[in-house]
Length: 370
Image (cartoon, rainbow, N blue to C red; front, side, top):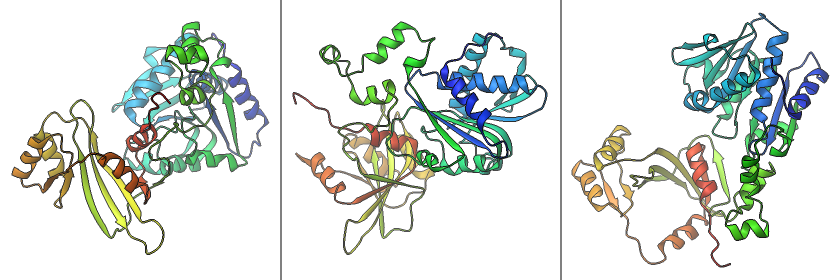
């Protein structure tokens, strides 16, 4: 085996060695892009499998979805094991579309947290868990169910592109340690990749070159928790579901190259203080024509009126001809800013959704000439 990990591997190995053997251990690896968080975790789990040959440990590798787990995490796993000289195609098996890999007698199962089977929704017994990019849409309740039933070791990693997230609460746990690493600790990183990350640093040269980005430098260069600067809606609360509401409506923004977004909004008015406005994403994908939109709305069985973007008047007419109560919005000069002001008058509560989180955290002001 070609075994040449970075310093993070040894930090994790020392934590495992020093832990109370009667207790489980959680390791959360926070760091910049290309800091080798994933590869060092794979090195660690490979070493554990090697030292426990044929003990049939229950090991699960998770991403937010099975698609991402197969296309991203399994790809990293294969590349890392190939570098170590221990990858064998014969050890990779397909279990009804869910990959399993036999490593030194241990079966590593690659899964997505979007699986609605009872096992994934509620969790199952395990010896080792690895949640890759846990900030990217990994459901809190499902993660908790798996961690609760885990016997020994849980590892999670992420780029800290949020300043607030439920996983940060684990810092209060006595059985959890947080590590921090950056691309500078990765001894195997190519100089071209290093230069690309360094180009985000807001130096005079990078500003002149147009590559400087303070948010990206903090998150992907320094590995520091940060919210994108200049967010249009910085103060939002993320909730699990929409409660009973006093009134509700629907909004539809059309997109062909970009995503068509269908949202449900509910309001609970308060006699004092800001009203509670809930927002839930029902559909988020490009649609080529109005027939697809009609199909989506009818499948969701929406019978109340829907306020639609006015950039596709023909689509709105098609929806109305199909029996949908579609209404065109009437925009006026300054309507965008007026809408922003109105939304900032209420308490904005958003039902947890990775696509909505991405919208909220990337919808920001652009500075032009100061």
